Amino acid sequence: MQFRKDEIIFLLGAGASVDAGIPASCDMINRLEDLLKTEAWKKFAPLYNFVKSAIIYADGIKGKFEYANFNIERLVNTLDELRKSDEHPLFPFIGAWNPKLPEVTENDFGNLGFFRKKIVEELSQQWVHSEYDENSQYYEGLSRFQKEYQHLLRVFTLNYDLCVEKSCKQSGVERGFGEDKFWDWKIFDNEAQLESNIFLYKLHGSIDWTRDKSGKLTYKDKGIPSDQIEIIFGTTYKLQYIDPFLFFAYEFRKRLMTDVQLLICVGYGFADEHINGIIAQALNGDHSRKMLVITLFDSQKHDETLLYIRNALKLTREDNVILWNHKAKEFFSDKLSVEELTTIFPNEEAPFEEIAD
Image (cartoon, rainbow, N blue to C red; front, side):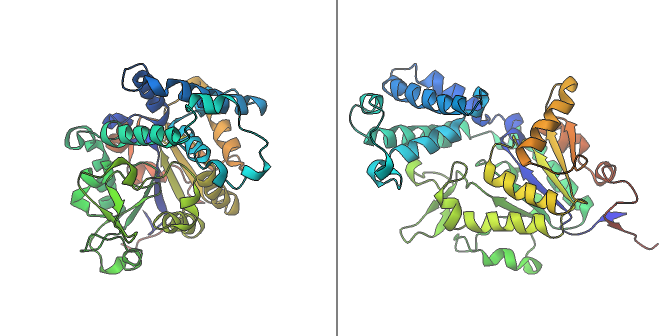
């Protein structure tokens, strides 16, 4: 028995690349806080402390006291909103800024943008880099699985790193760039003419992406200024109307709502409401669909972990989420196979077609 085309797709979160030496979002906060103790960064410490405290305070008002919810994406998104100042659509409804904000910005809201720029610079030049040939080889498991699967494999990722591109070269990784190095959504519509076996959809951008003067997306091996790297932090306005982010979000929804029977989430923490909403719509809309979640958790907290995921997605059934307690490296290297995945589906529900002898 064999899975049909597009019945399996992957979603990769930050946890998928941790074994390659790339820190998860919460770990980036730890690294940032270490930097804020250094001479070059300490001037931003009061601003950082103010913003972090305000985010945690806002969560506390809602009865949420999970400090792990504060991560690099929330920090950067908040800085983005604050630096809009009087251009923010809510500005006319705000009586006054918190009096502490002008103090920590030294009465210059431009420091919000400068702090953000420094964070993105550190992220792109330090945190998200890896010795790919040495540390991310376990991603080759996607190539091995694709050969066994015998169909085009669609991989959606929230990560900015180059782990999939570097490790799965032998399969051919399609990212949507033509021979002129410019991105074109029509490339994904001509899959029958392509030799690539893995289609990679980078939902939040990539550290090697930038735009030319006309706004067209291209890529460079190195030398992109930090303020010109085309990445987004979670759900921002860019995701709503600018390609490739709009196209990739649409593709993710389309694939989940049509042929897919198994979504495999590796290292995703279910903290992105936009992504969660698409997944929930798919799982609640067709109860034959299942989601396999690859994550590390205390073996005694299986039910607690499962409940967290179900609540995050607001799922209406109890049997369509399966947890496997593995690191990404272990899963890709040893556990990812068609045979292992067939165990998720009872024979009477299996989405397979018989192949005649």
